[in-house]
Image (cartoon, rainbow, N blue to C red; front, side):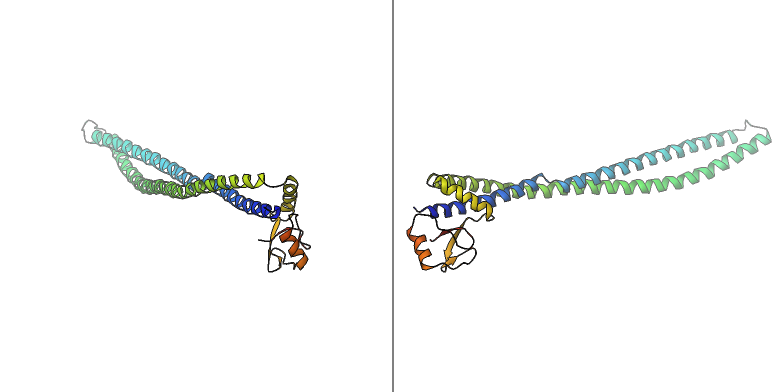
Amino acid sequence: MSESLNLYRLQQLDTNIDRIETRLGEIERILNDNQRIQKATKALKNAEEIAKKARIELRQIEDKVEAQRLKRRTSEASLFSGKIKNPKELQDLQMETEALKRYIAQLEDEQLEAMITHETAEKAEKQAIKALEQAKGTTAEENAEMLGERNKLQDDLERLIREKEAVLQSTQPESLTLYKKIRKAKHGTAVAAVTDGGCSVCGQALTPADLQSIRASNKLVFCPSCGRILFAG
């Protein structure tokens, strides 16, 4: 088997290996990227804090209303008990009862607003919980696809590496060194196939003598323009 054929096969394998390794890297980044879940989790935490604050404020206003109602009932009980005979005391107690009534009405308005705020906050919290569940579900589905692709690519990679090892065993060390050097300098393409009488990479036309040398000799022949190793299939 000619040395140029070995190197051409090696390049095909290296190209596919590079492609697979690049894609595997992309898949790992996708699998490790949980920004969707992080965003939904942050939104839920914010909604929970707002809902908690709304619950506390509602409980506080409810306690306040109940305390003032109890105070009013106590005042009314004293007012109508008949035990207080002093007109001035009765008048003060009457005024206090009326003031409590007005204050309770004000507090009840605040309580209604607090109830609406609390209801809105709880609704937002439930929506945030649902959004997080959806984010986790979507991510799980996408990851399942990525994991399936990753497993297949890893199998392909192992096969290609075995094939590459077999090619390396029949490749001369000095040719391999030269191949690696050119491949690095030529952006991954060290070997160019001959098509239509010229270099398939740069398009340089080859002389009949060059073509004959490529086909007949076991020595490496290089493109006079781009310097790549030439292979005639």
